[in-house]
Length: 155
Image (tube, one colour):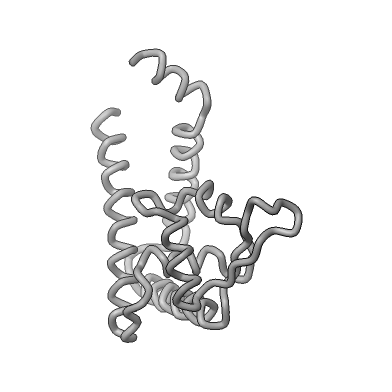
């Protein structure tokens, strides 16, 4: 079980890194130099929503990056609009600008092409659905508070 578990964790990590490489290649191909792959992924996950910087951090998609720094750079480069929250003057809400929404569309189109290509490959939709269910269960397992407390008490 340990070997299978470690193999799964390694594949998930490599999959995320490869996703970022694919996004970087798409940005490079389009000549977009003022936005990095993590920032583009942040924009894609914001989509049409308005969120706080804290919510972006809590979503946890951007490990290894400084969300506040990336938000600041995207505001400076015109990809995000940042406004102080009306309800909590200490926090800021962000939403994609028109330029940011164009990046969302770019990635949406990229992922759409991938889905079409996948339909022609040996990866069936049912396989993806089953994989997602398994990864969701793994995520819940790793996120369980009793798991964290057991790990902490063993240290």
